[in-house]
Length: 256
Length: 275
Image 1: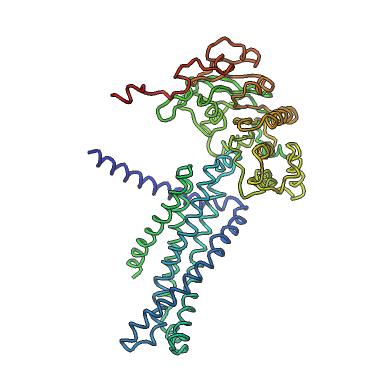
Image 2: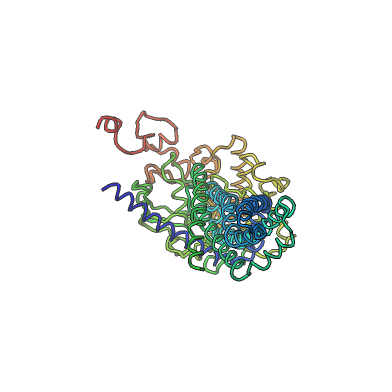
């Protein structure tokens, strides 16, 4: 009986958590526009979440593009379709690899960092002191981070896509010896903006919202203790990654 | 300029009055039916041993906590009943120096002090610079304005926190354990600073502290809390001579060997181990 009660309590907590997270995100978004100074903070956050993520995204994209090209080439060659490597890679990157892998990397780098930052601010009573100075931390802290995350993830996804293609083109042209003209023309003719590129970018906007919600929720409402901050950063990475994969399936199924 | 934001209703700050306030946390009564008045223009000390609810009492006055029962009145309004917006308006009247200082780690000393001004006023940069530097001068840290919080000593961080709390010229200033963790010299520096600011800025000052010696020098009125109740109140001279055994224990700093002094309420050791 106690076990059932415990399961029930956990389920209720989870539902309450979703409600609190939704309330936080909604308020963060609305209150962002209440303060002119938030635009300055937004630029700073875009720099942290976007520009400073570029090296990680570039390195990951170039190697994923290169590995995927070799793997695809080995399979396609056995069917006599080696020239389609570019098209296969392009479809995979624009539709799936780009949005999903960028979101997973982003959860690890940006999501966990924002959870830890907010957790430490809470631990050192910075939220309390802002409230006592009549400054709303949801407007000044949560709002700009939320908007920055929703903006930067799609931009990083676009960046990932193009760097992955460049990595692929390098392996296909220079190492495998495929004709680079064929590679690019197959890519150009086979990839359609509305059916291949746009759905991927739409997914990345949703993923940005999911990662922002999870990381801000755990940072803002999490335990204000050193171990609490550490656990909440881990929770952000685990829950953020799981939700990205689950919503990827749901979105693909719905958009088909 | 700074008076511009003050609403017409709160031109002259009245006293804060707590009536029959009870506050519990996790089923434990922290404050039990407390009634006190914070008169305008005075230095009030709320004292007592650790864990008796001093900071909780202060948080009720700043609107961070709401009582289970009772009222916390300021200028005819019950603080716990205020909407978020009205509570923010009320907080524009007060300054709070938290025990942890709560400085913003990424901002310099100057920007920490300038923060409330930048948030609430559209000031020209040169005017803001002058205003902040004048406040930093008051706490002796004008030349440390480019340092960041991690480069400050405990005493310096406390003074930055103080400068930030007074930058909007509050009518009521709250200090949560301002002397805790400070060396004797810094304690006296802070004491002089608090006294000087109180006089020059014509404020009401509320201090939460357990430093008997400091409060003898500083406070006009002292309240002593024990087990969630006010056990003595009046001028420091009168209160610190009170013959109430609980007051004597606190003021003279002795233990009669009673376990109640240090043990959290609950079941006895025998019950815990053998039941």
